[in-house]
Image (cartoon, rainbow, N blue to C red; front, side):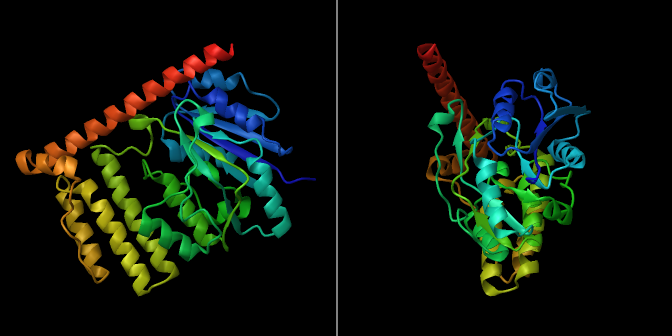
Length: 337
């Protein structure tokens, strides 16, 4: 009998997208699968839409709002699969995503191998998804993967991974303290328990850009800044547990320098701790600099005003691009019908 793959979908206020997401899960060419949706106290019609798909293959449950990590833990507790495919409620999988990765696992016969795949960003039109390779799109050891991730500020999208049940159990539950980077921290722990990453280029993941509504969006939220600082400390801990060397310390310093601007100057408490971390690594952090577009604002009106302007500009740009893409999507649909 073929191994069972559990496709786990945490959902919150995803009424607009979840039908497409569920269809992409149901249409996976891998024959033996279960799909579990956990609605995390949505305030829109997400639960109602998901329940329309309920069947012997698709189960839908709900819980009071507790956050994405808690919803993922709930989904994992219900899963019966030999392998776990995570899928956010607004993203899509290519039809052969799971099957292409399972083919590699069956050939390797190794439960401790972690599988990744290509992923690209889109807004409303999946056919316009851009797949831009990064230094993580290859086979890597756990140490080399983390060095590249931290040193070049890279990541793999949540749904790009396929994880064995053994690895999922060894890694432990998702950390509910993390509000926006729970997936990055979780897969670092999975990586530490693995023998390495095998990149499978055939299966693809379509990652929807949702702007300020995205879980990964930090903005000016102190709760999210605190959670992000916690994940930064955990990343350093995980990498240094694998290797304590000059290249690792240099990578950690680059990582701290890159993130310093998110906390500077508003969160002086975290800024001070980042400097202490840098000192413990044998280095020091430079005062962050804004891009030329905002440096003059910083000189004239101060850091807070400049960062606020940058945030407003980026949000406005994202909203404009989303509106434009949505309009193009509506026109294409009208032409096709």
